[in-house]
Length: 262
Image (cartoon, rainbow, N blue to C red):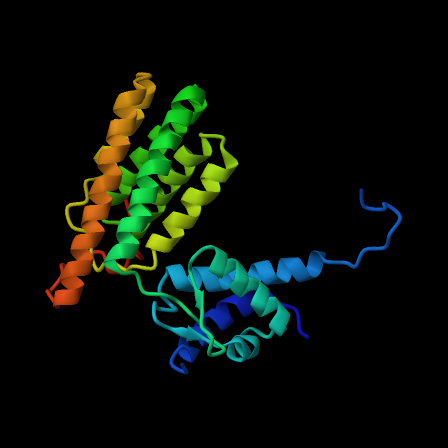
């Protein structure tokens, strides 16, 4: 079996996109080596994760194990491990018919994801308020500023990046590893839904108000601002879903940017 390289990752990502049309312990005991195998399955996971959240593999696409083995040049075991991790993230679902599918988000899915985000990310803000340092606050301010610069320059991919980095940094400052993991999973899931444009996005101003409240040590105002931010994001996605279902024409600005979320 040939080695899996970064070049392979780029090639296989392209090929997979085309393929979607087809549808205690004794310390003396000897343990088998697992490092290489685990690294390989993680690489495959990252390739598929990137393709899914960037919509190179679209919601509704069926993923066949033998096809992924052929395209990626890895073993079936490696593919199964990667798919199992994606399933844990809620980014694929298994079918009894020997394939795995990337799900499409429904109105209920969006409502459930954002209701959980509302509970978890407001909790995260409370924990950040207890732990915030000048360095952490400076990092959040920097990300807001970089997001504003990207927006002014019309760099929508940059805007997406700094939006993501802001939420990641804020979550990391909570110091709660399980909370961080749960929020990351939810944020991955919402990216299954592709919005077709960014219209009058108010998120950066909302980010700025959250940071200002944290800087002033006003926990309740920071929580309120995060609540408003999450609820607005939920409404935005539900509106996009309704318009896409009804066939209304969208503003096409921002199509070069991948999914954008609150």
